[in-house]
Image 1 (cartoon, rainbow, N blue to C red):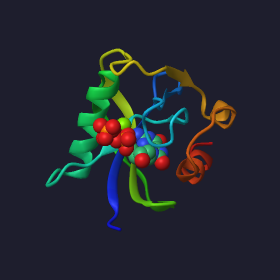
Image 2 (cartoon, helix red, strand yellow):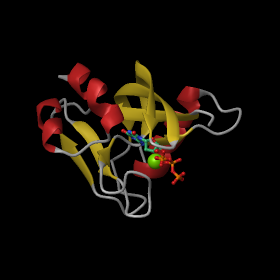
Image 3 (cartoon, protein in one colour):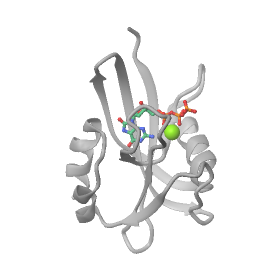
Image 4 (cartoon, rainbow, N blue to C red):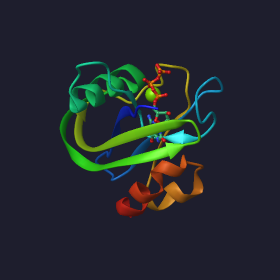
Length: 127
Ligand SMILES: Nc1nc2c([nH]c(=O)n2[C@H]2C[C@H](O)[C@@H](COP(=O)(O)OP(=O)(O)OP(=O)(O)O)O2)c(=O)[nH]1
Ligand SMILES: [Mg+2]
């Protein structure tokens, strides 16, 4: 099965809190907490996909960001390659645009939330 490429935004605000959002019932990994992001479209650059998903899901426009981690992960039938960007400046107010729960939490608080397995190494690197 081919790898699906995913771009993800780890948004950090001026108080060093990180934006997390909860996956919906009908989605893969339903109910898990995640960082906003999604599938890279055909021919789309990785960071353009991150910018698009961030805007579509929570209404933010990233203005300063860099690649934080990039890893492959196999979930039963799904092979993903995840590109995590750390966003340290942005425009707009975080808004739930897809009806999902969203929250700002400190890095230390991330362990209290149920994230997908693929996120564990990244969460450790944020501490
Ligand atoms: N956004 C996001 N996805 C993650 C994280 N960790 C993780 O394993 N994933 C997985 C879940 C999904 O299989 C995939 C992301 O795809 P997605 O379901 O968000 O895709 P999308 O936003 O384009 O949504 P859709 O329109 O296809 O429903 O990556 C994470 O922190 N953020
Ligand atoms: Mg998504």
